Length: 529
Image (tube, rainbow, N blue to C red; front, side, top):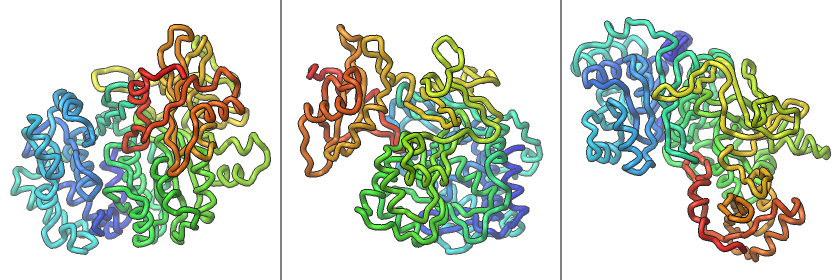
């Protein structure tokens, strides 16, 4: 199984079904997307390059470029346009790419020495027939009509796609080179093969099972694994994907209402902003059925508030990594509602878990010596399954067995997984391993704290001392000693921050991951108290 076959199956189920809608409301059917991707494949072959990269925000160009790369038998490389020139240049130096980019990024890439740049307007003009172009209001071409028009446009750009496209895709062929977020180190390219991505899709969703009214809102950026796999999974399901190119809480809510969205996925910072924007008012999104979240740890206070403001919505917490082709564990809707209403502390605590492993996925917690940890004991999280790649560009990883996620956590007696953070984030104070998330969870329950990050700073006496960076709620005031006392009242003394520093804001990636290494650098010179 491969990504091209998944698209072919979607077309065979209903070529006229709306597949993707851009931020301006322009829509392509499954047949229209397939035809545009064929034209994109021919264009890519003419222009050259060993990979097809994408450096732009969400829109119709993204799925066309993705499946165009697949049809051209090129690895697809979504690039993080928010990286500094030095980081982006370092990535591009190791590739031989044709890049589909918006106009701003196109100029930037040329300045970095990239020769093959297709700007989005020209790319769409070359792949989508003029009378069906985005913005025309059409639902897109039929499979037959658009294929003919698409191949004609491709022919004008060079030799057609048919001959090379006839070569079968080997499931072991590379489908994606996806650069990790680099929250603790420099980004590196995860290698995801067709068999990994297909295993995830086939194992998690049922083909063509979506109702005709179903629509999924996608607001995570295209260089995130969730951006890729939400598109592919929903296409396989038969659910229309609606793109949001720039997130704001009000814009998100407006789009859900206008496009009659039934399913959506957000990262924790997005949900926190949506909750803040509602300001205690019910969400008023009658079509929304399911809201999934993931990508970073969700503060319990935020999810508790969201469950109250979206009373008729089913929530799901999805935990996964780039290297695992997306989700490997899910806390489902029933668990969310049961935890919210339960008076049992153990059941209530499950709101802080990421749920149980997906079918076909095994998760194991290991101690430093490699032996499995019993339930409730924190260790390193390992995972294996057909969707797990664990391979990086240059040959690192790819053992085909257990993959070390570099996350730490534990499984409870019922098999629920609790993720405490990255192994590199663990604070070792006086020989004791301390998870920053435990302290952060307590601080966030103080009414004056809007956000916080806890890190370990080198210390001659203790090895590391605990420093908390705190963002205060608007109009709130709190003395650092008051906050230290608040933590001390709920956790033992060794987990009380040695110092609390009030900051204006914390650094995050736009997928909601805290840049803890940046916080650590900013706080390195703080006083002991």
